Image (cartoon, rainbow, N blue to C red; front, top):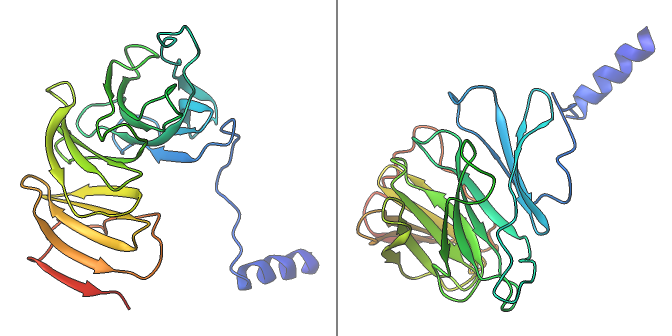
Length: 239
């Protein structure tokens, strides 16, 4: 009726929008990553502190796969679950890279590789890639050959996937906890609590850009069509 139309128009005027689809992902998930297009039906990977990695069908809202926690530690105690970040590995369908948190001596920061098609536990684990601290952010290069992992103290390292996640380089300069890392083309960018945006050459680790953005930063996204060209070295201050 007219009342319904008026309510709908009012909602539109207020900028309110209903979600196209929603479902319960289970637990207080702090990480959510959509699978890249072309891998079949749309899927979403989720995880968080106390919430292990899971892959969900976006269409049905049902779990398509759930990770199983790693084996007990050397004291036969359960290893705490803390998924700090997750990324789909480019060029390798149904494969996820995960960075984990740090709980005293019970859980060292790790980078883990999961093959959803093979098993529920990680097929590869790299302990303490950034030292004895939490891995707070991960990203993958476009060719899927390297993982970039950032830590809570500002350490940023490049890991060789084919070499068992061995260290292949380091990006220097970050002074605060890294909260997001993104790779595009030949560049790697990171932001964190030191209020800086930094762009590095992915292969040589050279700092291309450093911009002060005034706020503590928690997210970063390359724009469509971005080739990761930092445009040469330089510094600047955000508006």
